[in-house]
Length: 176
Image (cartoon, rainbow, N blue to C red; front, side, top):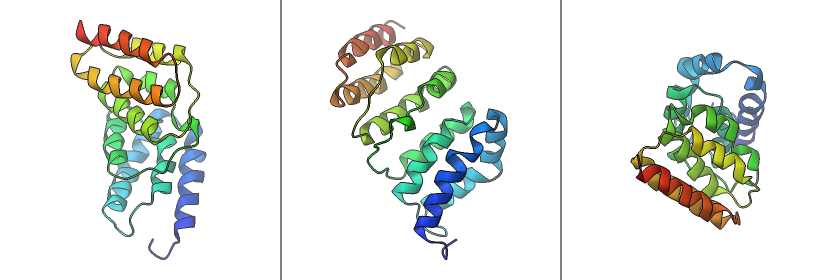
């Protein structure tokens, strides 16, 4: 893999992970993760055969949203170990997938959303999408800090309704 240039690796990540796997079932994507992709990404993070670039790491984002819950949590940890380029593509934030994973892996979902929002330069979100997400989350007190980080990033990105989401989250997570 060392002989393959950065551009080729980035193109592979974008084309294969972002598009080819798109029509595959969640279970099949999970098997692909367990058979090969988890080990590959981990090895790349430690520099074998070459360090993963921020561009490649960014290309992994659409793929991780397709994973089943346990595998998503593993991928979330790996995503945090490498840097992301500034994101100009709001499609990296897949709220329908976040809602699918929210009850099973709430900490990982909020962690990935925080990472993506903090790397974003622009974002045009709908309040209703985040209201639907919070309805899917368990009302566990340990999630409040992550929710506050998300609301802070939404506010930074100009979402005027972020303070309302923050209040809703504080009420939900403190009362449970």
